[in-house]
Amino acid sequence: MNILLIGSGGREHALAWAISASPLCDTLYCAPGNPGIGEVARIVDLDVKDHSAVARFCQDNAIGLVVVGPEGPLVAGLSDDLRQARIKVFGPSKFAAQLEGSKGFTKDMCARYDIPTAAYGRFADQAAALAYLDRQGAPIVVKADGLAAGKGVTVAMTINEARAAIEDIFSGKFGGPECVIEEFLEGEEASFFVLTDGIHALPLTTAQDHKRVGDGDVGPNTGGMGAYSPAPCMTDQLCAEALERIVKPTIRALSDMGHPYVGVLYAGLILTKSGPKLIEYNARFGDPETQVLMPRLKDDIVTLMLACTDGTLDKMSVRWLPKSALTVVMCARGYPGEPLKGTEIRGLQAAAASEGVEIFHAGTALRDDKLVANGGRVLNVTALGGTVKDAQQRAYTAVDRIDWRQGFCRRDIGWRAVSTMAKLSP
Ligand code: AMP
Image (tube, rainbow, N blue to C red):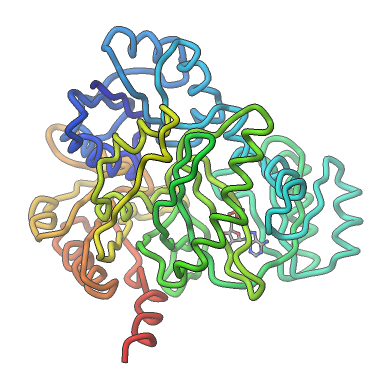
């Protein structure tokens, strides 16, 4: 079968790496792709915003499955348009992708289906939002409603901070002027991934990421500076609880609404004293979490994705290597502000030569046969290990072999898991 993958980040390189190894995959195409993906897939010059052009490409190239990596094309309805052209797609419809695209939609669904999440108010009017804030007090969380690339959320410790965040939202800084104000929840955060065909749920595994740019989880938020899987705090019991109380009711809700969700549901959870609560849904795999999921996956990703599109997920199971995987994101100097572009990166082959190490590209480009930085997050250096500490050491050994003076990374990815595991071992 020929497969088309949409996207160009580290997540898509990890997916391309896994998909291209599938016995079911004849030719893997990717648009827009990146140089790393180009090593395992044919890069195609396709405007993914032009849905009819994507459908035409699929028909012309006998594409049997389209895998949509990022949220943008899902929220823009690419899956709907391809399905209408009778093309199989792994990824939810525009309606179902509101789980990620609209915080208000998700909060209203949680309220209706009794899904554990933070108490909230939803406002289209600044005065009403400010009045609600005054009644609730701080700490409190203010969120812009809509895709804001992780930048629309303010965890406000003071009323003044919260007030400024509300004013920003209603000044149109994040697009549409609508906001959600949420109860502040305390607990460790973890990501839980579940495949669904719209009816059945197949839990995958767990991960944790590091959003802040600096060591010790300080500084501005980023798209993610590193991740590891599994998350030691997500015990089997907590996974079962999250599946039964959060994810399954969500799948039922979307099905009841007449828009069954097909794809991967990524639940961002906070483990509170009264159990796991939903902070947010993503309608796709995580980035950089996918870079630690794919190396641990023992089964064929394409078989699993087809079971989602074909409604046969109840017949599937999934196995994982009993190892930890950890990825360190290397960024161009300046990120998360304006990243320095065009600087040369050397030494990738040597760095990737160790067993269990994979380097997934994100913002890279080829210029005159040289690999250069072409974005903020540039490389994902991933390693498998018997323990999370072992994976961490292997990943940093590989990082240190890369010759890129204008790049940087955090040096403490995995610190929480390493310390949790140290406490658990005798
Ligand atoms: P979101 O984009 O909704 O995932 O929010 C981004 C980050 O803000 C999360 O990863 C949490 O660290 C934090 N956050 C969001 N909602 C809450 C909440 N209700 N209580 C505490 N922290 C939150």
